[in-house]
Image (tube, rainbow, N blue to C red; front, side, top):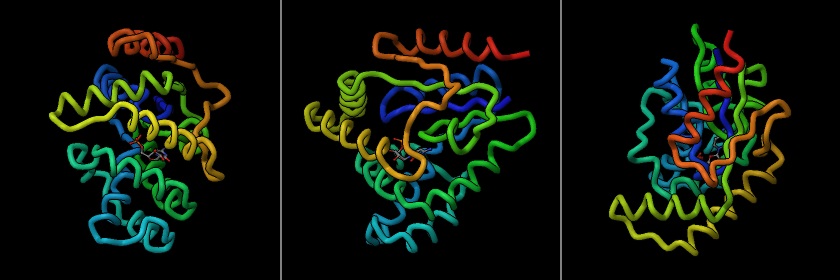
Length: 207
Ligand code: C5P
C-alpha cells in the first residue's frame, strides 16, 4: 500500500504521516527533508542557493538513510529548501530517490508537496492536509517556543504565506491537491482528531 500525503508548511502532515507509518507499520519518507538536506549542504558549503548545477550535484548525493530531522528542521533551512525546490534538476535528482523509496515491497508512506501529483500518481490513497495560514503560523510559533527558541508570530505568518506562494506558484510540481485526494483540514482538529480521520480515510480504501 502506498499512502501519499501532501500539504503546505506546518499543516500537521509530518506528525500525521509519522503516526500513520507507525499505525500501519509502513516505512516513511518525509520528502521535505530531502530538499532541506540540499539547502543545508549549500548553506554549510557557503554556496549560492540559486545555482542549479551545484544544487543538482548535491541533490544526486543525498542519502535517504542519513536525513537528520533534528538538524534539518530549523526554520531557515526550510526557507532554503523551498528555494532549491524550484529548480527542475534538483527535483529530478530527488524524484528518482523518492520513487525508489516508494517502490519497496509492502509499500510506503511519503509526505511532501507533490507526492500525489508527481512522485506517486498511482498511490492507493492520497491525502491533502491543510489548515489556515494563521493556524499554521501559530503552531510553528508554539513549536519553536517549546524548544526554547525565539519566535515572532507575525514574522512566521509572513514566512508561511511566502512559502505557500512559492510552493503553489512554481512551474515545476507546484503544491496542489491531486484530483482524487481526500481533503483533511486540520484547522479545528488536534493531532489525535486529525489522525483518527486519516486512519478512517486509509481504511476506506484498504482491501
Ligand atoms: O515540508 P517541509 O517544510 O520540510 O519542506 C520544505 C520545502 O521543500 C517546501 O517548502 C517545498 O518548497 C519543498 N518540498 C517540495 N516538494 C516536496 C517536499 C518539499 O518542493 N515533495
